[in-house]
Length: 151
Image 1 (tube, rainbow, N blue to C red):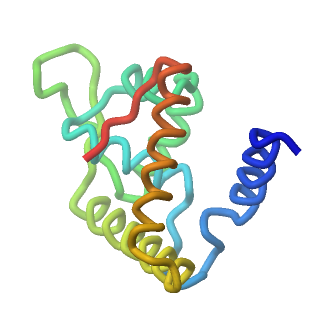
Image 2: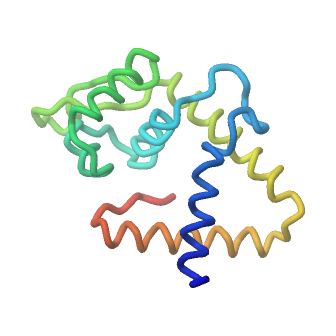
Image 3: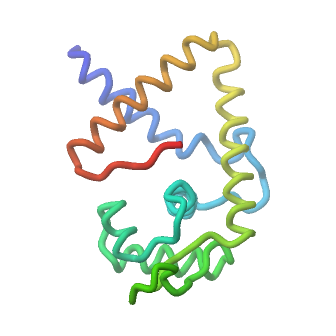
């Protein structure tokens, strides 16, 4: 089997685990929807409110999809729509205090799940795995033309 075929297969298996498995060590009450988690994570890491157009460009999704996602997150009290702080015409979305809290809680739950999964891994292996994932993701971002900010 070609090495890239092995990567394809392992990536398939990783994606089938469904967001690290519902309840696999994560909080049990009201697990955050994956699309909300990704949306909130992007706005958070951006460090500034984002418009539908900016989100559309960041995700490579059409505005109608993002309108549905932002509407659901707004109804859930996770984000709010505000005037552009820079004075532009487009309204922007920012996380609410509740959105920040739930995002931090969800992220900590995911990290706890990963700690459980990799509990027998040496720190060097975890660091190497993270490095390879970063490289893989940045190469995808380079080809797609859509980079994701990193802390």
